Amino acid sequence: MFELKPWDAEVYRRQTRRSTLIVAVTFLALAMLLSSLSVMLFGTPGGDNFRFNLGGVIAAVLVMVALMRLYFWSQPWMAAAVYGWQLKRSLMSITNVMHQVKAGVQAQDVAAMKLLRFYHLGLTQMHQLDANSSAQGSLAREADEHLTRMQSLNLDSEQARLDPIWIDMVKKAYSGR
Image (cartoon, rainbow, N blue to C red; front, side, top):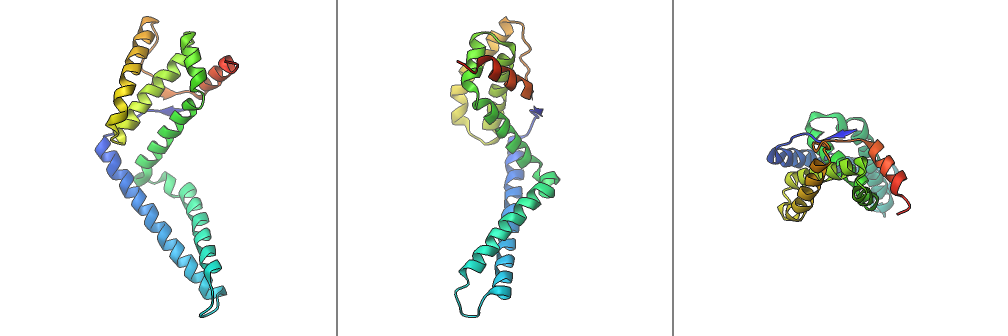
């Protein structure tokens, strides 16, 4: 279950730039090291060693995937990037069933109403974190209308958590529409 957390946008951007730089520099160093090592071990002096260089870069990609999953992901300096990735992934899981969510909202389905509210809150936060103010304007009117509709139905409008069960419920209920 993903939960929206407050983030200062400037701190978020600073931390994600830092983590991106660390990951990029680590990858470059690994790619250069592994390419050089493979040419040194398997290459021929003065020959065409492209395949060994490419093999070193591919090996660096594989090592980076392992490092990201096993070590970097849990580091404090990656927290902002991890949060941003999880937020975008959560929003995408709703976007993938948005036509079913909207059908559920029209039918006043509680799970669909909560999903759409979480979507609006999450998208607003993502736009703030990414400093994308141009996309916020079109979202605000739709979000306000939906908030009013939820309040008129006495539904809790503070949907800071995404429950995957809501997505499954909406998929099952509105898959034929």
